[in-house]
Each structure stands twice: as C-alpha cells, then as structure tokens.
Length: 220
Image (cartoon, rainbow, N blue to C red; front, side, top):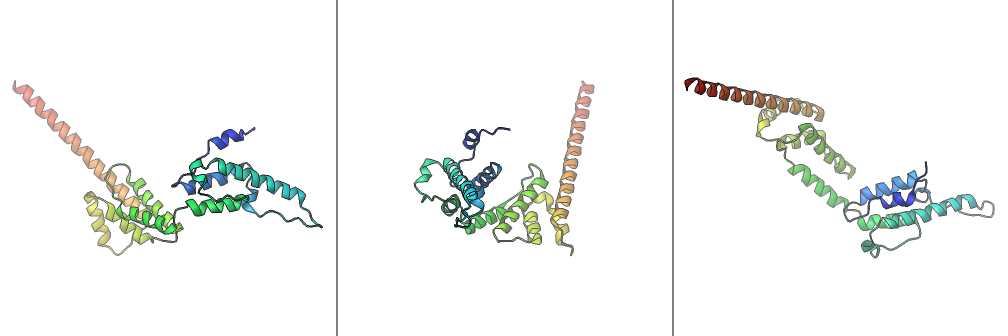
C-alpha cells in the first residue's frame, strides 16, 4: 500500500497551547508507523575507524531530518519564534515539551477540582458518569496524586442527587465498603428502578386521564 506522506502530514493535529500531550502522541505514532522514529528512540551512532557505522548513521540522519520536518510542519507559525530550534529531533521535541506541556501540579489541581465539583444531574447514563469520574482518578494517579478506591466511591456518592438518598443511607449504615464496580452495579439498579417507577406512574396517569375522558363523554 502506497502512503501519501504529504497528505498524511497535512491532516495531522496542529500544536496548540492546550493539546500538547495529544499532539505529541500523534507525532510519535505517525513517525513510528512511517518507521521514521529512530532519532527519537536512540542517539546518533558513533563512527570510529574500526566501525564507521555508515549505514546506521545514514538511517539515523534521515530519521532525524524527516522527524524535524514533520514536527515543524505541525507547529503553527505563531509559535515558532518562541522555540529555540535544535538540529536534533529528540532534543527539539523535549524543548517543545518544556515550552508547551502543562505544569503537572496545575494539571493535577484542575483534575482534582473537576472531580470534587462533578454532579450527576440525572441526565444521561449513570454508568458512563461514574466511569468518567474514575477516568479522572486514573489521570490523577498518572500525575502521582492517587485517589484510593474508597475515597472515589465517596466522591461519587456525594455527587449523586437526592433521588439516590436511599442508596447513600444504605452505604453509610453498613460496615462493608463497596468497590467501584459494586457501586456502579447498585447505581445502575437504582436508576433502572426509578425509571420503571416513572414509567408506571406515567402509564397510570395516562390511564386515569383516559377513564376521566370516557366518563365525561358518557355523561353527555
């Protein structure tokens, strides 16, 4: 299969002030798929009289040159003057990381704030909502701020609306600590129960209105 590299490069995600991690992953993936990431994975081979390493050096130089071209191609011109250029792709990528990567402490603070203030409104799917909170905890762990499972369960329960009060009381009155999977199971069951009650209530109301209309019609 022939790959149109210029077209592929033109479709790559452009670097911005808020997407460095995603951009870097895309760059590394693309260079890896194109077998051009050698310069990012290892230092330039050393040439000695006994071992000139001509073939390896030639391959590394091509990888380095192509990597630099592709990396620079995805950086908007407005940012290019902010970066001290390097002739080494690995070093250049590291300089970009220092310039654009979000401070880990700041990122951890933002993620923790989001986790604490999240609230379930009853719209959507509660399983997906809890998984989203779990995903935030996983990102915090990667930043060396681990949220233990017991605390995450508390965060989830705190974020649920009053309709889940019975479930919260059940958790608080027993000694057994729920795992996150158990919590998801209980919440899904509670959500399905409430949906069933709402459906039955709607049906009852609809039936009642139908009987009332029938009586009014019979009285005419």
